[in-house]
Each structure stands twice: as C-alpha cells, then as structure tokens.
Amino acid sequence: MNSVSPKERIELLREQLHKHNYLYYVKTQPEINDFQFDILLQELEELEKRHPEFNDENSPTKRVGSDISTGFEQFEHAIPMLSLGNTYSEEELRDFDLRIKKSISEPIEYVCELKYDGVAISLSYENGKLVRALTRGDGVVGDEVTNNIRTIRSIPLQLFGKHYPSKFEIRGEVLMPVVEFKKMNEARLKGGESAFANPRNATAGTLKMQDPSIVARRPLDCYLYAAAIEENIFDTHYESLQACAEWGFRVPPYSKLVQSLEEVFEFIKHWAKHREELPFEIDGIVVKINSFKLQRILGFTAKTPRWAIAYKFKAEQVVSRLLSVDFQVGRTGAVTPVANLEPVQLAGTTVKRASLHNEEQINLHGLRLNDRVFVEKGGDIIPKIIGVDISGRDEDRPDITFITHCPECSTLLIKKDEEAAHYCPNTTGCPPQIKGRIEHFISRKAMNINAAEATIDQLFSAGLVYTPADLYDLSVDNLLILDRFAEKSSVNLVESIRESTKTPFPRVLYALGIRYVGETVAKNWHLILNLWMLFSKHRWKH
Ligand code: IVH
Image (cartoon, rainbow, N blue to C red; front, side):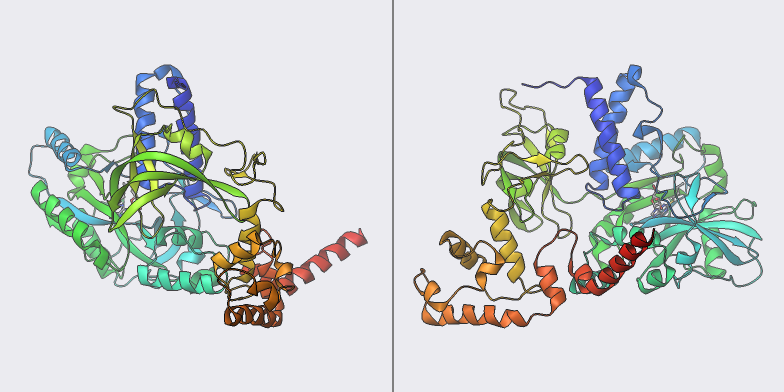
C-alpha cells in the first residue's frame, strides 16, 4: 500500500497546477474545469500553510495565472488587473459580508453582476480614442491585442460626448455568444477542423491569433464591467458604469443594486435558474461594494480585492462508487482508462462509465477500487471523475495502477516523454487499431463506404480485411458465406466499395489516417506539396 508524504503531495499538486495553468492560459486547451482547479489549489494552500518548511516562491499559490504568450508586444497595466476571490457556497458569502461589516459600520450597498465566462480585457482610451487593448497576462503586464480587439463591433473606437476623462482604462470580458459559437463549431467540423471545447476556449484562442482578418470573422463580443478611472470623478461603481454607457460603451443591463445579502441570494437564485436563457455563458455572479470610498477603505489582499467576491456555479455533480477500471485502445494506439461506476442519475441520464483520461489523472486522485468518487458532466462532454472522497475509504483496497501491457494484444506499452498518454506500439497487429483504421477509412468524411462497425468486426474476424486495401479485393462470393450477409447486402457493400474509388484525392489522403493529417491538411495537400518543393529547392541551393 502506498502512502504519500505531505512533501510529495505538495510537489505533485504544484506540478499539476503549473501544468493546468499552462494548458488554460497558454495553450487554451484546459483539461480540467475551474472547480477542479480550485479544489487542487485549495488543497495545496492548506498543505503549504501546515508545512511552511516546504515554502517555494514559485508555487502556483503565489501568483495569479498568466496568459502571456509569444508573438505579442507586452505592456504594463496602469492599474494591476487582479482576480476575484471565489466561493461556491452561501455560507462563504455570509462570511464575506460579515468580514466587511466588521470594518465598516455604515450601511453597505452591493452591486450584483453576472460573471461572464470569457477572457478578461483592459481597454485604454486617450482623448476618447481606443489606443490599446491588453489581456490580463500576469496581472501586471499583459499582451497587446489591440488589432484583434478592434474587430469587435460593440467596442467603441471613438467615444461619444465630451465628459469622459482624457485618459482612462475600462475592463471587461470578451466572449463568444453561444448560438454563434455552435454555428462556428459546426462549420469548423464540416471543414475538417477540430471543434473548440467551449465558447471561452474559442475566445481565448481567437484573441491570441496573429491575423486580425481571421479574428474579424469570428463572432466575438465584449461586456464591460469596471472603469479604472484614476481621477476621482464618481462616487460609486454603478454610477461610473452608467457614465460609460453614455460615452458609447455597451454596459451589460443585468447588474442590480441591492441593500442586503438576502437580495444577493435572490439574484444568485434567479440567474442559477435562468442562465441558459442568456445569449452567452456565465460561470457565476460577482458581488461588489458600490461605494468607491468603502472600496478604498477595504483595499486589497495580495491577489484580490476585499470589496468584491465571485460566487461560482457548480457544474452538476453526483457521488458514485468506483467498481473497476477498463483500459481502451483507440485507432491511434492510445490507451484510455475508463472507470466503471455504480449507475447513477446525472443531468437527465444514467451514468455508468466515466473517463479517467490518463495515468496522471489516476495518480492525482490517488484512486482505489470501491472509492466514493465525484462525477461531473459539463455540457455535452463525457462524464468525468473530478475528485475522490477519502473519508471512510477501505484502506486495504489496492491502488489502481496503470497497465504495462496492451489489454488487446499484450504488447508492452510505451509512453513518450512529452505526452500524457500510453500507446500500444503494435500498430499492425493490435485488433482495435486495425479495425479503428478501417472504420476511419470508410467513414462518411473519408471514403464514405456504407458498412457498420459490426460488419468491419465480422470482416476482420473472418480474416478477410486487415488493411483498407483488402476491402477492394472483396467479392460478393466472399461475403455470402458470412453470417447475416444475404445476396442484397453483399452486392450493396461491394457496390459501395467500388463507388468509393471515385473519391477525390484530398478525402483519400484524409482516409489514410496519418497523424496530423486531418481534413484541412488533406484538402490543402497541393499547398503543402508546393511548400515542400520550395523548401527542398532552398536546401539544395545551400
Ligand atoms: S470584476 C479586481 N466583474 O472574472 C477584480 N470580473 O477573477 C475585478 N469577470 O478574469 C474583476 N465577469 O475578467 C469582474 N462582472 C464581472 C466579471 C468579472 C467576469 C472575470 C474577470 C476575471 C475574473 C475574476
């Protein structure tokens, strides 16, 4: 039985949090959601508090995340862009209110706002003109993405009236409305490109593109939520936003001024129920003290303001029990661990299986058989295990260890350093890889041969088809001796295979299932060929 020391656990958590920060901010391809991230961060904060001897200035707890990437000029924010403290419970919101009331005796007015699920942006205006747009970056320095931001029509390039400060910053969230996001994803899939996981990833990826003309074609939008005006011209946050609306900014109409915590809870309940009706995604609500004077009195901690807090909605979750773990081998040989769970109702369906992604995820949760596990379903993604309840755990149960050999063909698995997945290298002898390649080959977007998965199984088991090329040797007579193949179905299949010989070249190239050759690359084969010829000519000259 393995027992992990606090030092080892701290190191593992730091490593994981650094990685997830990078995946989120730099690659814009997160593998875990905010809630899972916060759980890990909280555990690390707890452990670091209890073990100051393992202090590290570079720990993920010591900084706000960074989205700095290469290729953009960087500028310092006039006022640092901090993040908000998060809570997931009403109780913590009551604590927030109590803390404030301890230092302030006058009545408190709060502004309740939606927490837009997009990418933070800071816009600088000088003499009424947009001069610069910066991402949050590390909070102090951000990437300059002005040309991309200029493509967003709801952002004024020139302000109205005369009463705006000569120099100020306004902050908000760039996002992609859900309907447009879905349309864009459908078009991408049709064009053979990969779909974005959610509107926020699509937004983050788009903002970091080098070509503003592509950005202009993406349906970005922006909601502004805070004016960082140094001159002391407004008394309250609410008032400052109303003024911004008069200068031409689109200030969201969803904010509400309230005088009590009970009204804050009403706002939360309302939007928890009606969030699906909004044109964009939100991940919670934000509560801010309205008075700038009180905001100044309360000030900031190292990372967050004391006068505001974010209440985040939890994704729908249930508890189940881990019965066993299967290992599945895909077309590319990648091995994915899948948890078999005690059946449980979640978001309208019965969940019996959940993805465990890879070995790292199993180790991170320290899973054991029979553990009580938290299962979450976000949007249309397959359910996943996001945590484990170790209280009342049966300590005698063994840890789950990753298999060393392929469950299908017993070949020793390999793991490349830079990748999280294990692979079965037996590409030509491992049944799910062979069948997977044929299934890909005949798929609609590839050769469009009319055969079900079960048919491929049958052809493979009968020893008739090992590679896509074998399909073209099949005859009606070969098929007729197989179970469930009558004259008509045999003729149809052979006919469909014959018809596929007319498939245009780019689809044939895609059908071969070469790594990194998706539909788009395949469609642009001539460009790639030209590039390659240029490249070889160039090399030959030197
Ligand atoms: S106020 C000093 N208001 O949430 C902090 N932030 O951790 C000022 N966000 O990435 C932030 N909606 O971009 C504020 N109505 C709202 C917001 C909001 C979304 C984002 C913000 C930041 C994160 C805060």
